[in-house]
Length: 425
Ligand SMILES: NC(=O)c1ccc[n+]([C@@H]2O[C@H](COP(=O)([O-])OP(=O)(O)OC[C@H]3O[C@@H](n4cnc5c(N)ncnc54)[C@H](O)[C@@H]3O)[C@@H](O)[C@H]2O)c1
Image 1 (cartoon, rainbow, N blue to C red):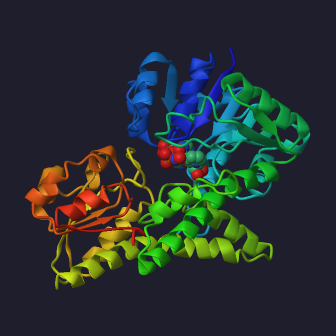
Image 2 (image 1 turned 180 degrees about the horizontal axis):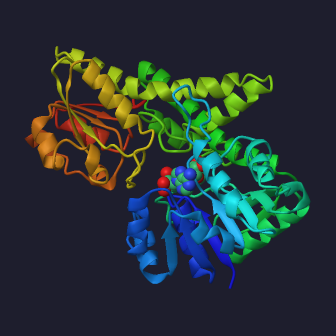
Image 3 (image 1 turned 30 degrees about the vertical axis):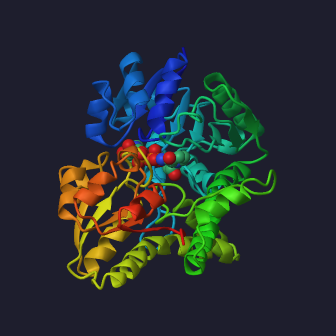
């Protein structure tokens, strides 16, 4: 039986480790978070995901913080550590460098080392390969087979999961690419496409996520424009979607969050800068998407003016902290931008997220409605989408800013409550 170590047991690494175990590999998980390790070794999922929670009960894996427990025995090592940006939006590769450095000290000859973390084109050759070289492993000579296989997982998506998502791989050498492709073919039920280089694989992932960021920015800009023109963008997107080719619907919202879309474009923007290219379009997309939490507040202020109220001391309830529906991940969530801006403007802010209890300052939705006069919906969790609208009236809510365009606009308006979605005229 071959042995796999997954390094970094988060939203990417943990599902991967479970899948490898299901496919018959002996699996270790290496992480620096001791609490996470303890939970996993008790078969408890540290992330809110029913499927993973169930899988953990049925598989065997051993989590550890000690590389010597697992790296020397591994045939395959897969790195899934975070790749955030720093306060200047420059790539922060600390976790990648530290993890590869720890691995390089104990890895054995001929091991397959795959980086799954999202990285800018050139990272594997400029950062990972030199770290291995320090330990006398020459990746170009296949001392260690080094490849990149970007992860496409979309937490919470039940249709496209790790098992059925096609993958691309690129190796430092042809042999590394082939070995990586063989490994992924042994665990997933979808195409594994071998690209000619690591750089091409690195760039593929960045392009996919940048595609999403610029399209969302485009539709956010349309939303702002249509708000001025009194046009409902949701109706327009429905209309445009009837075109059977060359249109792909994207939806406006109060901002873009998560560990991928608002970060990955910066990886390319910064790398391109170093090699003499200025990504104007990508930077503008980031700027537009970053402006959306403030735009949601601008909409609230416009509605407040209509009833001659001010944002100062306004009691505003923010629904949701997670960056997207029905997940517990609040990384880079636009909800924080909304909350901070509201506080700066002197509003009294109440926050509730059923999936992110830590950041909530009321115990449930009822308490939030009770304490608030105005609402901004930041996350389209089912609990908010399916809210009993009669409660809004009962709790004397005066204004609803629907930051995810997921509530029934007509019903809310019919109750005499002021409603404004993002781009809903
Ligand atoms: N979350 C997503 O939806 C998603 C999707 C596709 C790709 N990605 C990419 O995958 C990578 C991981 O993302 P994630 O969301 O799983 O992050 P995460 O924060 O959920 O998990 C990362 C894990 O790595 C651990 N870690 C940090 N430093 C470490 C080190 N030096 N050694 C060992 N473990 C370490 C952390 O403790 C954590 O458990 C990132 O590059 C991200 O861009 C994420």
